[in-house]
Amino acid sequence: MSANYSLLFYLKKPKNYAGGPQPIYMRLTVEGRRSEISTGRKCEPDRWNPHANRAKGTKEMIRQLNQHLDTIERKVHGAYLELVNEDAVISIETLKKKYLREDEKKSREKMLIEVFEAHNKKVESLIGKDYSKGTHKNFEYSLNHLRNFLAHYYDVTDYIIADIDLAFIENYEFYLKTEKGCIPITAQKYIKHLRKIINFCLSHRWITENPFAFYKSTAKPTPKSFLSAEELRKIESKELSNPRLRHVRDIFVFCCYTGLTYGDVKKLKRSDIVIGFDGSPWITTNRQKTSVASNLPLLPQALEIINRYQDYPPCVQSGLALPVKSNQKMNEYLKEIADLSDVSKNLTFHLSRHTFATTVTLANRVPIETVARMMGHTKLKTTQHYAKLLDTRVKDDMLQLEKKLSSGHSVLSDRS
Image 1 (cartoon, rainbow, N blue to C red):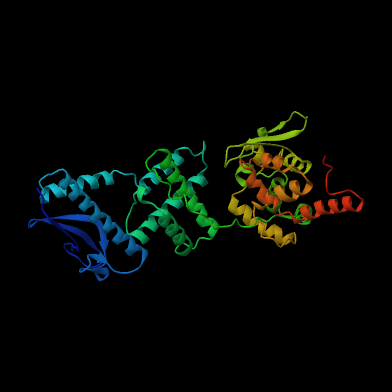
Image 2 (image 1 turned 180 degrees about the horizontal axis):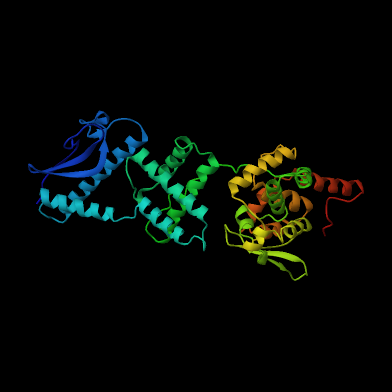
């Protein structure tokens, strides 16, 4: 038995209302009987058009709100058509029940913030095993950015993962760059975290379509800075009367000749330095960031620094190879060291790793595969970023070719 129905969206003023957005309700009417159902959304009264039953404006938040109301209207009509096809009695009770059953299915779908929170709790429980404290902190920053984004753009506290589309991702990227002031490469880091959550949902078959399928990042990596051979020599040879600055300089130079990160050198123990198969001292450790084995022979400059602290009381007591201070303090003292050494570059601790990859190894024709292995890189592409920086290497290679050509060698190999 068929019956017509009508649907109306309206703002419902709560008790003791003092201002601000009001809840949006849906009023269903069948044969004079009606029922009110909350849509779960709100709207400012001056943004509501009662004649159109929709919010007015062109902002993204308004567009998404109206899309949500459109979806509800389609679901109600879908429930009505199902009742008609089933030849069921259509009343306010049966229509509401059918709609709410479909809406309940939707409510059981995975939610973005809920899944992200569960992910972060798992990361936190694996600190020291699979993840570092810094990694967990970065994921927490990402989670907070998403919470704020959802409140700012959609006026919601969570979002159905199956509803995330390309527009959602692009809106989030725009929000990070504008509202949060992130540079493109930093915004991409947070987008990468979102992609990880989406891939996790895809692998568990909670969603079937990948919203990142047509997404393309336009961010370009920030050019890496490094010390030239002359700048490194200046820092190495500078006489420093202050023991505090000498310690920091020694640790920085040590990392210039080993490629260890701050986290890796901070946890480096004397027991991590062993005699290798060739009878020379080697460092055998795992990268803190990736847990990838990073075994490398100690160059004389690095070995000299290690031996300098062999009997240093704080190192003897802790079993650590070097007396490493906090990263913040190290970077603070490095600025002072740069000034004293007449080096104009912005000296940070991580610059030592870039210097190892470029000036110390690649510029001296150490094969890129060997450099990647010593640095603990899981992808050769990561190491190739450093190779691009070496214009001097390109110039040297071209000079070698020039000498060959001037001595009568052909650029073409003999082919049969």
